[in-house]
Length: 174
Length: 81
Image 1 (cartoon, rainbow over the protein chains, first blue to last red):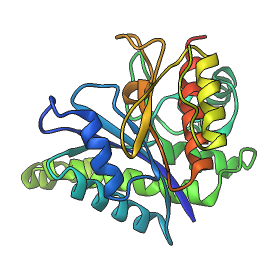
Image 2: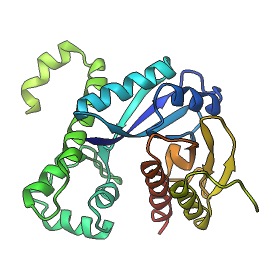
Image 3: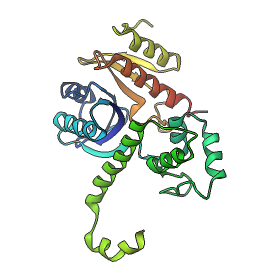
Image 4: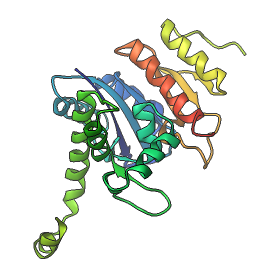
C-alpha cells in the first residue's frame, strides 16, 4: 500500500544550506517525498511511501530522515491537528459545506481540541464521525495513516509528561 | 523567459500548471532539479514550508511527484479566496 503523510522537522542549525540537505535526503532514500524548504530553520517532507503497513511506512521514513539529517527534530506529523478547511480538502467538499455539516450536527460532531478564533480538531476524530455517517467514505489506508499520525504526535508529546501530575489528575481526564 | 524543460513529461506539466498560477521556477541542483516558489511567499503565506518546494530530477515515482507538486499549488491558490 501507499501511505501519504507529512513530517515537519526543526533543524538544529537554521543556517544549514537547504540545497545540501535536499541532496542528502535523496541519497538516504527520501526521493518519494516532496521536500518543502520555505521556512528558515524548518523542513517538511510529504511522503508517498510504499509499505506493508502505515507503521512500516512511518518507521522507514523516520529512519531515512534520521540518517540524512541526524540532528533534525520532528515537530509535527500531519495531518493530525486540522481546521475545517483541511477536512473539507480531504473529503472534497467546500469549507462552507463542512461548516454547515458541523453546525447542523453540533450534538454529535467531535469537540475541537482547541477552541477560540481558530478551531482545531484531531483528524481521526472527524474521520470516524464522517465514516459513521457513511456519506463521505474515507479510504482505509487514510484512516490507518491518520490514526498512527496521532499516535506519533502523542508519543512525541508524552515525553513531556510528569508522572506525579498524571497520577493526581488522571481520574478527571476521562 | 526560457527555462530548461523537465525530462519527465508529467512533472513538466505540473511545473507549467504552477507557472500558470504565478509560481516561479528556478532550476539547479543534483538529485534536485530545481525549486518552485510561491507567488505569495510573504508572512501571510499559507503554504508553510511548501512555499518553496524542491523538485526532484528522478523521483521514485514521477507521477506521484507531479501530483504532489500540483497539490501544493492548489492548496495555496484556493486558500486566497
